[in-house]
Image (cartoon, rainbow, N blue to C red; front, side):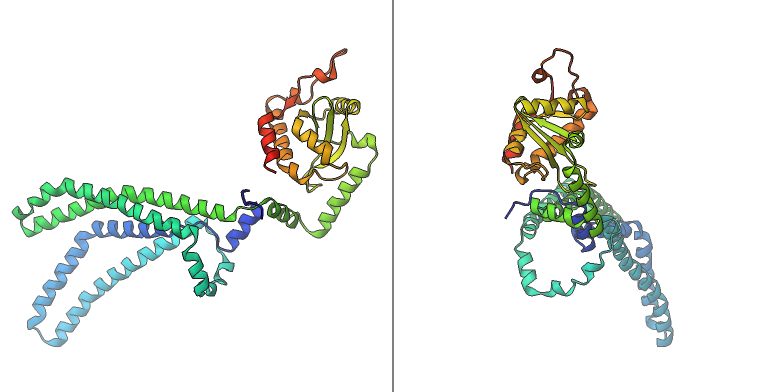
Length: 380
């Protein structure tokens, strides 16, 4: 089985989004809810403290009153408390929904809803428990907790002198001092928690990316499946066939590139994503015929690139009129990328001018680095 070391194609990413395979950090949602609730609690402290005081005071005053009056007063005190609890319950839910939508870029995965019952399968859940992703999260969990506890301990240790003087103040001052210390501790932890949020979001996206990686056979299959409708595929193949079956003079004018040895081998390649699935070999020559092919390419303005290893492989195993051999895919992709870079920076090296009396074999050609080029061939 080929190693899955190629990035996912756009269609694979789109399919994953439709199936709900999006990197969503559940830990970040929990942290956001915690921070929101803490900040709301500190910001509204005078309000809910006054509400609690009023309720206690009303309860004490109603002890000597008739039952009907007491129930009416209790109900009037209960409604504000119920409203506050509903608000406190709605805020975390709202944060969870907005946080999830933000991370998924407002992606609604209808197919994921149909897999809800599969998650209840004990066998699948047991398999997920021992997956690499779960093991990684099991290791990172204690590290995060230790980091947060360290920050909390440093803050508490810095406040120990003030805590030791707490017995000198009255109850109201003690309450205010305690609240200020708790808020300071929470603000210190916010820094660590924000870093944890960013780290976890990036980690989840990386894990999804790893999960979606493909091998070369999957990439080719995906490409074939997503070219378009069958009629369009047939039209493209017919155009490619006509291109290959055309007469030699016309065929020599059509290459996108000629890769050379540089003296003894020349191979003409054609590639157009709208016409061909893979790069095609239009012609291949050796010795004197290779020099003639180079000369025609130069006269027609076709890029000529020195790539010794690829030229030899195509001459030995490639067939004229056929796609380049599978083991040269990476090398041909590198060749096309090098041509793009030369077009931007030094186009004159792709189409060198031959002066009268100058030796064809001594032209300064664009070239692929030998070490990198050989590495692409070795990876096949």
